Length: 186
Image (cartoon, rainbow, N blue to C red; front, top):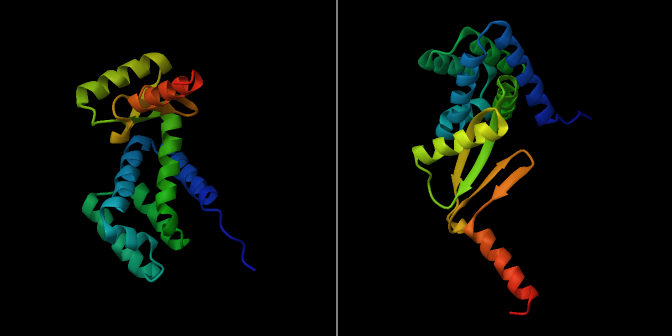
């Protein structure tokens, strides 16, 4: 009976190998941009997603398709070689997870702290920059904001990095007020 592949572990191994190779060739920043672009393409292009994940596409056809995309977006030789290794090893189906693991490893390598912000409404550029500046002073690291909008918060926002979370949303304040009122019998 074949052993089931742990995709997360597999992805992390490939991501680590790609980052090490990129660092050795002094191309970490360029490769990180390419990985992020190809990762985003998984969400924006059904064709790219199918090319990378479909079991119906032969390795030869997959290689042709990947080479066409590589030429079109001018991928580095290192990235083309990496994609070739994934094709050769039949691992393109895990590219999305590899990209996510790579981005995490790259950010750790560069000392970038990912911060997840959920706000009741879209934050303008000035507000985002102010939030980045405040967080830089607190954590003494470069900050990468991941902003999402959730109107259910009513107002305010939540900020999370790792296990730390600050919740200054109106929804949470109302919930706390409701608990207090129930506690005193109102």
